[in-house]
Image: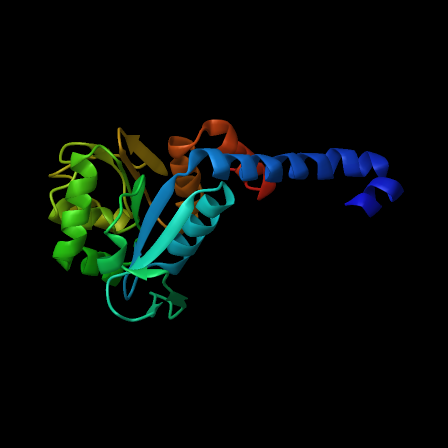
Length: 217
């Protein structure tokens, strides 16, 4: 950036300064916020939703732990992308998190729904008034575990009929109702992630991250 400032001073001021400012703020935010997230992943989870959410939240200084449901160190997702986890869920649940996140993917969401350990985690998170976030097909797992009955939610469109008897269903890209954030699918993963960032930190931090990623909603 120092070379840019010497050769193209006007360009450097308009482009580099906002980036430097953003990076400095992220360092400060990470130090001050100490927010934590647990993102669950299972065989058949939607990789775009898992990776984008993890990436965006880490950009704003949130400490994200990616936890798998099984002993396998790497998980094969819905499009055969393999993601290596940070921890097993059985180990990760020994601490509390500001948000628990469920990416979608049909088979991954079924695995969440069938896991008593996931159910216990979500129920405890809800009882302690901490944030839960689910995207795509994952809200169906929330229903199975009795989470947030009667709240406003959204999901992947094909899941709508499974949810309308338990929730107030909306078709917005992201729906926030108290400590519940839901979203629709892979294309809304950025909106979903930024909504979590705004909820846990603040709107300015989320807006700065979106700008630095060249994201426009």
